[in-house]
Every structure is written in structure tokens, then in C-alpha cells.
Amino acid sequence: MITGALAFATLSLPAQAQLGGLFDSTRRGAEKADNCGKGKKGDRGRGALGGLLGGAVGELARRAGISSWVPVPEFSDQLTESIACRLDPEEQRQAAEATLEATRTDGEGAVPAVGASAAWTSRTRENVSGTSTVTSRDAARGDLDCITVTDVIIIEGEETRAEKRMCRAPGSARYSIIA
Image (cartoon, rainbow, N blue to C red; front, top):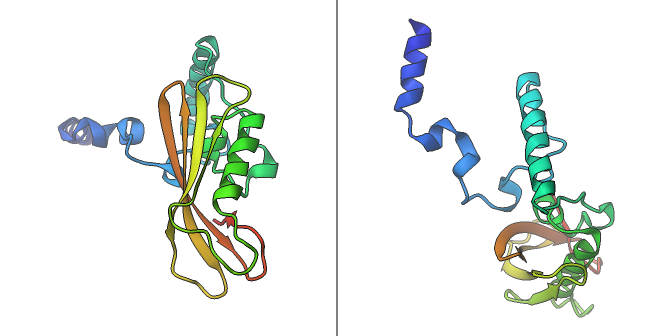
């Protein structure tokens, strides 16, 4: 009887509620699951099922010519995983350089303006490009100077966005992603 009640309750929920975030394309950046598909914690059953499904999806992606890369640690303070996992190592370098350019200060205390932006185009793949744009300035917290930067990458016409909160300490020359 309990099983029947649970089944009925599940069927009465909309598909969105039943299937969680599978169809939720409105979540962005840090809110999204790790696009590389590694390092997530969960129960063993979910992990085993995720491993099987992830392997099958990975194989299909490889056959279709869609690749997934591992984030280069050198750029982890400039790129979110949701962006880095979609870019090859050279593209990760270009995206990180764009973030540095957009957030660059003049060294005399001036801060990057909201709207400051830098764009890049892949040197290794066709139809891959991106931008980093300072989208807001956060209220000061103690000694930290913080901003929000939005990265947008376009791969074969498909856009991916990620927002990242970046801060710098007094005297520091550059902003870095903070947790």
C-alpha cells in the first residue's frame, strides 16, 4: 500500500519535479553539475548508475566528435569547471587570458569597470570562441575587492555561460575565483 501511494504521488508530480534537473536549462555556472562528470559525491547506487550512464554518454560523445577535457590546474583560479571542461588546454589558456584582460587594473588602485570585456577565438578548433565580461561589483567585504565575471563560450553555435565571483586582496595585482 505504501509503495502504491509513493508511485501515485510520483506520477502526480510534473515531469520537471520527477526528473530533477535533467531538463532545467536555466541553471548556470556554479549551479550546474560538474560538466566533467568527475568528483561528485553521492550514494553508491547513484554513483554506479551515474558511472554507467556517464560512460555510455561519454562514448556517444566521442563517436559524435564531441570532446570533454580536464581542467588545467594552472587556470583553476580563472576558469570555472563548467567552462574549462568544454575547452581544450590551449582554449583554456585563451579563456583565462581573456579573464585576466577583462579584470586588469592599472596598478594605481583603479578597478575594472562593470562592462569591461575581452574576447577570444580558438586557435585550435573552428567555431569556438568566448568572452569574459565584468558584470557587477560586489559590496566590499573586509579588505577584499570583489567582482562578478560572466564567461560565455560558443562551441559550434551552442552557448554556455558561467558566472564566477572573483576577489583580490589589498596589494594583489589580480582577481581570482573564490569558493
